[in-house]
Image (tube, rainbow, N blue to C red; front, side, top):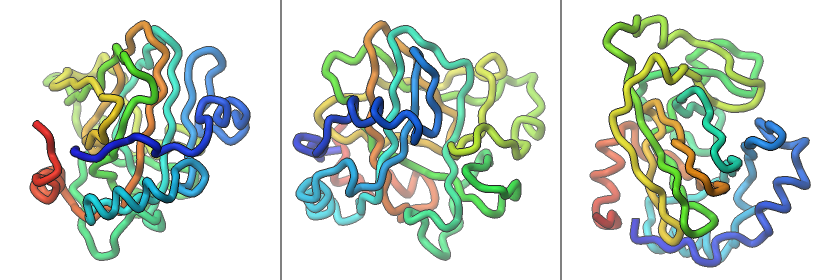
Length: 224
């Protein structure tokens, strides 16, 4: 998207995350971690305002921070879902859905969650040699079993599927200086390179129910 990431972050993200491993959704010593922060904790208000002024459709609500050590390859892919009381959800929208999961909730009812269509990502450091990858189930897999509601962790809104059950369908290297709209309601993972990876994933109010609708709505801001 034609939206700059310069001056978006108001804190030392790496130090803040490592100082708060007890708040991590997932933390694997020496390998990787995921943290969830509200927008006021991580983003400059000037940048949040700039995003909204530049593209009125994007109202930033918070962020996920993803850290992976060089060469660490996670063995599964996932889609993102969020609880129905998430600040990103728009009441009355029927969101396009492929998989379901649960999050930091006692609920195991998929009706309590909705699929997150898109996120808005960039890499903190220049020279990233990793790639976002997207997948679909292999032809010999029982799709209904893969779609079963399951609990991945106590905190992260994912449904995890082992990579050996999937075929890759697309990949993309995420940039450093522009927001990249990433599809999150299709199984995805990161194919890690040899550089440490810190990814910032801004989360916004989800004004669309499908990926096609998101692309159509943001056409004027998409850089090809």
